[in-house]
Image (cartoon, one colour):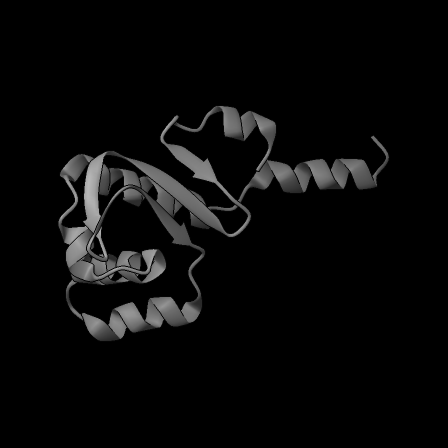
Length: 114
């Protein structure tokens, strides 16, 4: 992620190479331990397929199952988040899977010698 994009991130969000860490507005129980942060790893196609198989006709359950898998916790832990924190997890997930178009442009510019 470029410096410009990292400056636009909310203070509660930290992006890693293959994960994103979300600071919660209040501690929540994850795997029986109160935590104030949730880390989501980058999803695979297998993760998406497993979420679909788990809840074919229920998009909300698919999303909760997927987030739980990526955070390595139980779906009930994700369901226990406040709405504010769930929104943060959603935002973090979509930032995690989004393409960073500017980094490709920078690489192309550097390759061209600019």
